[in-house]
Image (tube, rainbow, N blue to C red; front, side, top):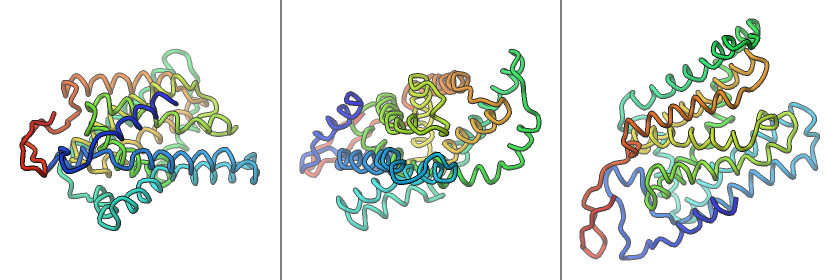
Length: 305
């Protein structure tokens, strides 16, 4: 935890004073000054970890309904932090800019959304692959999962993962990409993201409680790489990012119902393969806008990576 958070806090030292280089145009949607990152982490971790660790002390986490409520409430930490820090640092104008990331008119067309289909299909392939290796497939469980698919998609998009993206990709990623390469920003954010989930391993009954944390961390970093690509490809739009995040969680849920267990290693291998493919296809840039002449308040011009 200290390493990943330390890296992020170090980024806070980047100057945003009168001589700072600020991105313009499309780039300003995917790279922003790092102001507010430390406060964001304090609020996001404080809200989520407080809910997940202190909640069971005052509520019966053994009750599945209570457990789900705690997980959902805690999951809003990044969104609450993004809105709260934006309000303090920039007022209503900054909140409006943050929420405009949900504008469906963001550039990028349909291609960023195709990643939701690609990821969903690729992760579902782990079911026949596991069956070919001797795993038992519950046909009734698989059918039931597809019947409940619309409800699963809505739940995950609004309260089971997709709701995190206002914070992770909407607030944190643009600030990391101002200081780091897209790949490095993805890895740092992936580490923070994985550590943020850590208390869920202490809550019996969560999907994380039966997973290997090291494997999960690799999985989350791979997902982070893919989501960075989608974010940049949509000029900083969040709707396709939420769609891809939702497809990951829903596909994992469908596969678990079909196989009777969560096969995190299989899912990790699939996502790592997709992340590597994206890196090769984009030559490591993950669709981050290329360098352009950027003016500073002093009137000088610089080439920014």
